[in-house]
Amino acid sequence: MLPGLEAAELPVDAIEVGRILDAWGIKGWFKVLPYSADPEALFSCKSWYLMPTEKGVKTFEGVGSLQIRQVKLHSGTVVACAQDVLDRSVADSLRGARIFIPKSSFPVAQKDEYYWVDLIGLEVINREGQSLGCVTELLSTGPQTVLVIEDPKKPKSEPRMIPFVALYIDDVNLPERRILVDWQLDY
Image 1 (tube, one colour):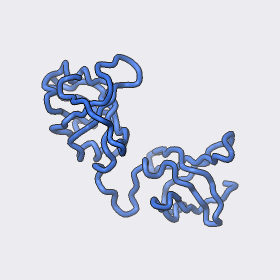
Image 2 (cartoon, one colour):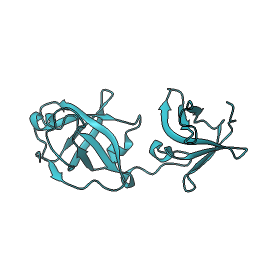
Image 3 (cartoon, rainbow, N blue to C red):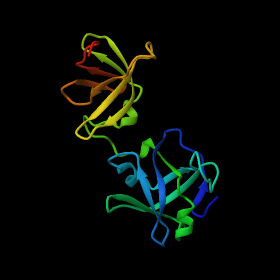
């Protein structure tokens, strides 16, 4: 294992939240590419779980736990430093590593706020009780987020896209794993 990394098991609720891009500076800091426009989860968790990149050079095997000392925004990017990662060469050896954190350490979502990972897989039902399919992904289009919905009964059909805005979204019920929408089958 690399300096700073301890062999670990990936938590059952682990979510991939970003990856390490490159070393930053000479004191062991590294740049991070967050997968979210709001990387608050990276800031709130002090222990990240790393897995090597799926392709390219692998400098470590398995899962490693990295104790984070500091994370900050710098010139529009996220940079971090970790315990026992004290120089550029060690930070550089983390390049490409995938970052996972336990969902239990995410900041609590406010009322009517949802993590994208919680919406994927939810069934989408319109006001008439007709199933439109399940959310397979979300797209950020700038001004709004769009739900991408596919009907498992019609695998060859084009995905349906519904803006995730109050005008079309009536209710999100996470315990029942469904979203109620004002959207017709023929839209």
